[in-house]
Image (cartoon, rainbow, N blue to C red; front, side, top):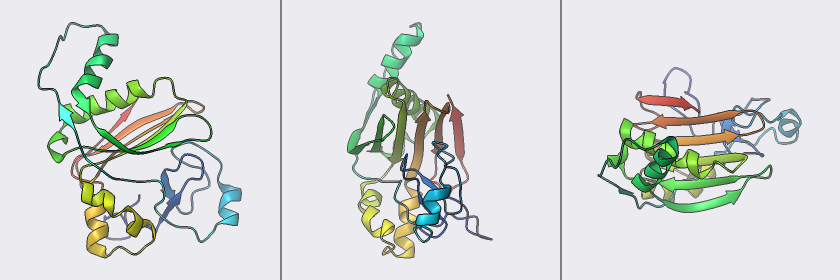
Length: 201
């Protein structure tokens, strides 16, 4: 998603559309997907008026966070296992990516939105996708925001609903083995906020 002119806010379904390959959200005028690097020029010629939010899907919430720090002397292999044991979430929707791999929608509670928690989540997602060529995972912090998905992508949501939807979009994990693109983007106070972090693996 990208800032609307002069406001610094992200607009839904005005300036974005869905990449047909990795299903991530991209600028409407893009000729190459910034997530999976697919060439989109011929796709845009056929679908010029398609500007919807199809790649980002959000729903459902259940998470438990292990309070125990466990053994910090473990090897890198044990660190991945620790991250997985610390971060648990509900997968509400999952789909196959044509070039190999999975896309998922997951939900976490807002009290997990801190650097330690989100870094652990990133490690969990990375370890889960270690054998996948591609991954496209979107993270939300509220079930109600996820429930607005259909209204948002069909452009029927009110401005307050769209704002709520974006306020609870808190992370995006993307991996493409063909290009080497492997990034976890975190928006601690929602994608419209100012507190963010980008991790390249």
